[in-house]
Image 1 (cartoon, rainbow, N blue to C red):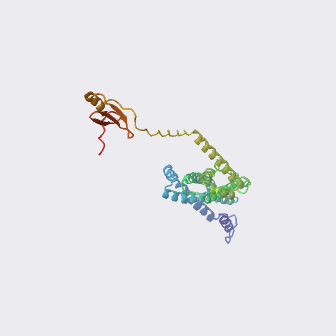
Image 2: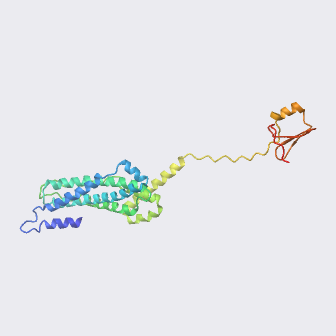
Image 3: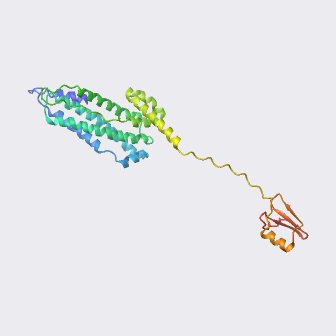
Length: 293
């Protein structure tokens, strides 16, 4: 982008028979084109329903979101380039459209940053949705944007055109992409080494956010109701050793009188002995089938 700016500004002074101060519309046309591409990326912002599909790891939604994230990061860089190109051109050119594009680029860039941050956050929660390699260009775009605004803030007043001093804009806060990176590394500890490839300021903020996520995780675990241990398994009940005088036993006693003896057998049955033979019954007083011969 900066090379393109230099070429376009240089060409403005190299047209035979014209002074360097004479305006060259090629720069303005390029600015308008870059703005149009940024506008298209911002207008393709994902809906809440689409973001939910991404968080749910929908394959098609995640694939489309990764492409859109790259477009939005490019839109951030385009916004920075447009503001620098317009600022440079306005040193000698009082065309009001340059001022309009300068201001509009800030708005488009802000919208692109917010949309990209929102999308990166959703992708960080998807399975295989995001890597630190995807986020590094975003952090780099933010770094270049901040450096650009710092330069704009130091520009002198435009004495040649008697126009007011250009105003730098603040970038969105809290710093975009920090939450997405923290979520990603918190879920994938092996990516922590990627922090060394970022600016120290960004790496420090990401580590701080990861510490917050650790604390939240511990608080959630502590507040969750503890599962009650399952009751110990009851010991298997052995066969009852008490005979209930009811049902068939009661009828037998009425008819035959009290048995001569009652014997409890190892199989859990009771043998009631009368002179005419034995009768087997269950502990609940019901007749048992006679033993097989």
